[in-house]
Image (cartoon, rainbow, N blue to C red; front, top):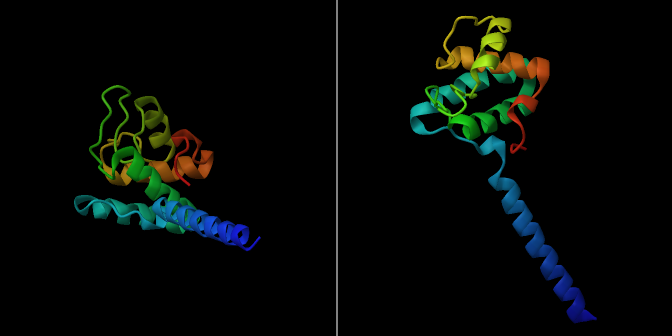
Length: 133
């Protein structure tokens, strides 16, 4: 009986350690943009945090990392997705207009991030799918 208890405690400790490590690995609060794009992370914080709160700011950091690694010039030649939040051309055309950035390039970080704020405020994160906590 004692051996079984020790084994159960050991397995529980390992499980908690592994799950704690995995949880820490995907913690959006630990996302730091690459050195050349730290200013993009600051822009995301400036636009998301006061408008949509900490949870959405952390999600924005995760999405920006996943979509473009914070690079405003990121481009997907297959879909045409562009900029920090990788807007596809049709979405960029109407969303940037509605967000007040009509005519701006999706490769300019400020309108790209600002349009992402507008999209999230009105439609949530569903346009970007999952993979972020």
